[in-house]
Length: 112
Length: 114
Image (cartoon, rainbow over all chains, first blue to last red; front, side, top):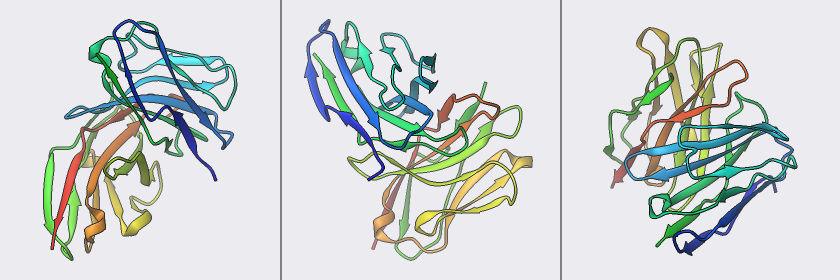
């Protein structure tokens, strides 16, 4: 089944403890992206990647890192999480820029 | 800079009634435009997309949207709403020309009453 898989689905962590949210797609898509969703703010793009080793900042990149070493994987790294990074995170992938994204099921992160 | 406005935060319609969700965008050229739907606890699902050609586009689940360049709008419509359409709907814009910056609207939550 064509899909974007994120792990974990739920995560509670403490301030400052490094964490990684994994994202993998099995559709051979070129483009991948990370979003955070907060009530009243919609989805905001954190980072995106147009291909292996090609990444760029979205609207809210502060406090996040990404890497794209393989086409299928696009992990999101929080080096020192803070409570304001408590949010619902989505990974998504797309075959080309105008094709629309396929979204993962989301990761609900709570930083205490 | 591109932007998307969904002026209606919450809409309530009766089952069987028609629906129109509004979306206005700002972008210098012709963008890619999308509508997504998010059911509670789920990720987003693409309903339809537009870039060029016929300004009325058909999507899944009986939805359609009309691109109006003069009004910078891309409104989503459905002639007869079903209870299963209750969800949150997001309009999004992507700048064309090899640029993957995606801007979403803040969403419209649809409630369907019997």
